[in-house]
Amino acid sequence: MFTVQRRSPVVSTTDSGACFYDTAAASTLQSYQYRIGGRYFPASPVQCSIVLGGAISNGAAEAYVELEKALNIVGDYRLSTGVNSTRWGVPLAAAALTIGVQASAHSEWDYAAAITTVLLGAPFWFKVEQPGVTTVGNGFCANVGSACYSSAVSLETSNGLEISGLNAEEQSDISFSCNWAVAQAAFALEVYSYYDAMMVLKENNVVELIQ
Image 1 (cartoon, rainbow, N blue to C red):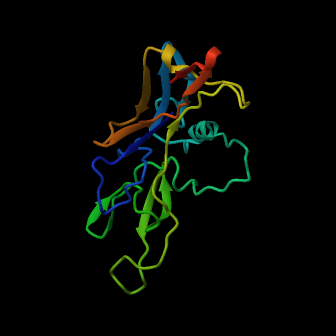
Image 2 (cartoon, rainbow, N blue to C red; image 1 turned 120 degrees about the vertical axis):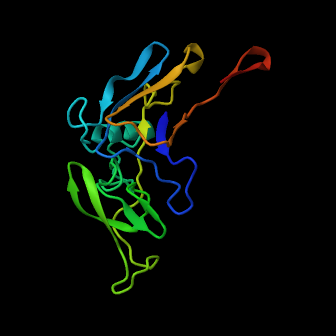
């Protein structure tokens, strides 16, 4: 299962694919956990702040490992990815940045800005412009892509070919519990679930569909 925080509604002047780690100033996602029926996944909350209940991000390293488990890419160095420390687990910037007609402190400009320094986990940005020209929208490229973050959990119980995972039919409900240091902006939390439907072939060619 994957949970992301995005703008709602989408703003046409920014990257609509940006998935935010935090949308409040001087804040961080502290922890998250899924509850399915009477069980918790993972067993302990995923810690995303330096100290319990703190407001400084630890870079969401533990959350990234959970995402790797959900995508089954743990330790697979054959794959390359655009996820790095400038995009993953990045909190709101210390100051708003104006590009075009919109000012925002969110990481949603997709390589139009670069990080100058970081204060208590919050980055400072500057625009990349053509020297001597006040307009943006040129071919120069900075080093900060749009934010990408997902609170993921893997429900698989093995990596084999046998049937594994969670039988959702036997669970009463599924809930996502998360804690931020500061109340978030009016953005939307979107939850995506990957599931399989199984067909059982019985006697006399009777097929039973299990969803």
